[in-house]
Length: 112
Length: 112
Image (spheres, rainbow over the protein chains, first blue to last red):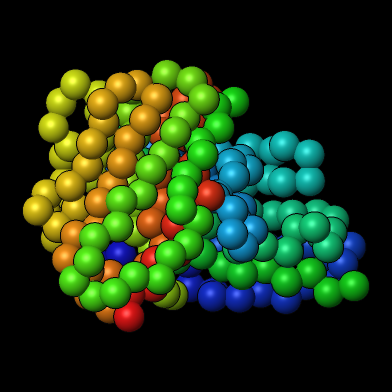
């Protein structure tokens, strides 16, 4: 049973437009969510996080929105740049447990 | 933030043999994790490796197949034993650091 789901395996967006990556979860005990970016042959790098006490967190071009009632979070990247082309993973943890539960990832392609 | 050096980055191994993957952290960390990512799937936690105690394995993973060492606060190894083609995956180590998590660059294992 997948507790964290990223239903879009890939997404293609024009450079300069907004990229929206979605993530759904099933475990209501999750209280901390993270987005990671991964280039080929590299480990994941941290992008942005949000705790369940907030519904929005912003860092430069990246904004994460959390809808607890829908058990849904999204990552917005605006404006999208060619260097944003990568695989994006959402991950969640529960009750200060350091173990992360991961989604399968969404491959973002930014078209020039 | 802390950096993890993971090696080998990739290997092609014969079935029935074993491969040991190493992760060296450039600072002391208490909690380390080992993940597996099979093709098209999310990162799956194999085990948690804390220095000074036995590794804790997740359901579906056993010590005989994936022995882990954690001799000090900066180093850990994962061995994939008696390999079969089903073990072909990316293996990734991670550590809890101030502000979140850091990851190795991954080991792409192909078993033939």
